[in-house]
Amino acid sequence: MSCNACMSLELFRKHRCVEQSLKTPCPVCSDQLFESAAPVRELPCGHFMHSHCFGAYRRYSYTCPLCFQSLGDMAVYWRMIDGLVAAEGPLPEPYAHATQEVLCNDCTARGTVPFHFVYHKCGGCGGYNTRVL
Image (tube, one colour):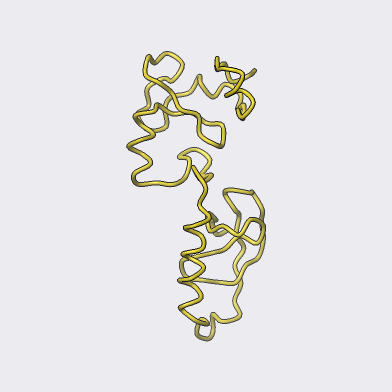
């Protein structure tokens, strides 16, 4: 294992190893994770942060502070955004047929999607955790 984490075999089966990820500071409080006595939590992307920092951070953000992948299943939230976009109806000219290049932070797909002022849906996974290129 290249991340230097000791864990049970049950956790290891679901573990996503990121090299030397415990030798870095916590992205929230900047204390060293490997030397800390505080419990550490692994994020779905393979990065780590202190458990208490995760609790505080999760209150105001849904993405990893390092790679911006979603911290959990966002399907319900994405459906809510789908509903909001559908309720808006078509965009006015000159935006009605405009497109935008995006990169998805969750599935890493790049693509061209219909333009929107706020929401840009990934053509790969259907999520809205995207950034405009």
